[in-house]
Amino acid sequence: MSAPETLAIEPLQTHGLPPSRWSPRHWPTGLRLGAALGLALLCASALLPVVLSVDPMVTDLGRRLAAPGQQGFILGSDQLGRDILARILAGLSWSLAVAGTATALAALIGVVLGLLAADRPGLLRTLINQLVDMVLSFPGLVIAIVVIAVLGHGFWPLVLTLGVLSWPVFARVVYAEARSVLAQDYVLAARLLGTSRMRVLLGHVLPGLTPSLMVMLAFHFADMMIAESALSFLGVGAPLGTASLGNMLSESRQYLFVAPYMMLLPAAAIVLAVVAANLIGDGLAAADRRGRPSAHDGGDKT
Amino acid sequence: MKGLASTLLRRVASLLLLLVVLTTLLFFLLRVTADQALVLAGPEASAEQVAAIRSQYGLDRPLLTQYVAYLGDLVRLDFGTSIISGQPAIGEVRARIWATVALAIAGMMATIAISIPLGAWLGARPHTGGRRTLAAFVFLLQGTPGFVVALLLVQLFAVQLKWLPFMGYGSFATWIMPTLTLASFLAPKLTRVVAANVNSALAEDHIRTARANGAPFTEIYWRHALPNALLGATALIGTQFAFLLSGSVITEMIFGWPGIGTLLIRSIQSADFAVVQAVTIAIAIMVFVVNALTDASFRVLDPRLRRAGS
Image (cartoon, rainbow over all chains, first blue to last red; front, side, top):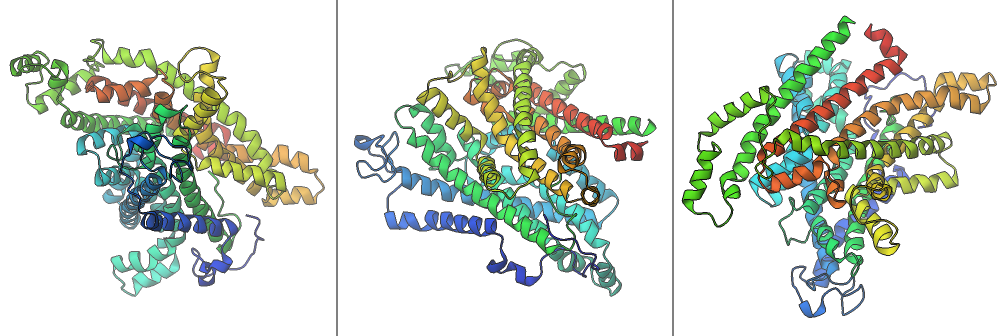
């Protein structure tokens, strides 16, 4: 943000970081913090269940609504006597899987259509841009609720809905950035050398977009986490009974007085995961800005 | 002015296209989700009763015929009749839309009242101790989904402190938690954008020149940096308001707010398709109008665009 301005001639590669900036030693503090937090959550959701070996679905009505630390439950038990820690870990891996797959799907559709629109002026570009505008102005939640009512509950309906409704975010940015890269001399040079269109797009344009793509991936992942938990909270996301953070929060509403920890603990898990993704996104954006020659082209001016 | 007229025309055309696609999509998707005749007849109805209801409501016609009839009604601004209340669907929407709009306005006003002073303050000197802590808190709040904030507010103000009612719509106290919930998921973003804009505006060449010429910091800040930063925030405020009109469904549900969000969820659950479609169309039109107004206000506020547009 406050990087000194230079009047240097722009280096050939205007987007992207010099390779050394990718090494963790050059990472901004926020990025390190986010990466550490994210890694910790991933490891916890993957490894802790093995260590604890408690089934998140096993009910025990004799030991229901135990407070954290009591009756042998580390983080307490819910209204059916299920272990809250085990359920949070299972819910976390469910949310991470849904959000990760949905983000990948949205990025895939968005990158392909964004590159196509940037490369092919004319009818195709008009069509794609119209589609982007249209999907962006869809009332997303409404469509999501209806689509999930049609396709049923489960992993893939949820991933498809989230991905198909959210790809325009990627398409827009990829389109704008790809057009500016396509106007660069080195792309022209590659074209004059007879490089095929496909290779120009994948080999010369796409690498230039990597930094912005990584920032978008991180933020999009955070958005997908929130959307997944919101849909599950409404009862149109994860199948009922599944250990998912949204379902847990929705169940906790009946026990506001007796067991506030039933709400506070899954809420904390969601917040931690989203904050980790946001920290990574912010950090990558800062690293990207630092790598660029001018102080004026970055920043989240909206 | 000619440019403005053609822009407006193009926008209206794209709104119509959106509405056609949206209603078509909804019409067919909704009819796959549930059989209205079964819902109307109730769980204990015999096959003859269901068949009678089907022919009474015209549900025995081919789907395509029903669709054409529906489109014909829409053109005449007839949105159909609610199968639950027997009232016109448009009336159901009209009775509840103001609660949603009023809540969105309250949420937006709270967001602006919090974010602009806070962002301006944070952006002026971002690297000092107290501001850093506050910025970290804003960051944390940005990572908190709206419905989690709502649950936390309920837990704090209604369960523990017993200051506010759990839900409802009426007295001033019922407005506090829904408004705060909406503000909590918009304010962090706006605060951060205002702060970033103020900060980068202060790094611009003309500001540096003014400072080098000896202009006091406060004057530079109030007369040059802040107006530029707020201009950049206008677009976001518009987008956020448009989002509130369609995105407050969960907030409305948690607090039992009698707006179109709760109406939408209830209608989907009870297969009241006419109402679902009417609500969706209403939301799409409102979002469109807000976005168009945002663009227009941008033109008025930014002298560069005004010159370019004429």
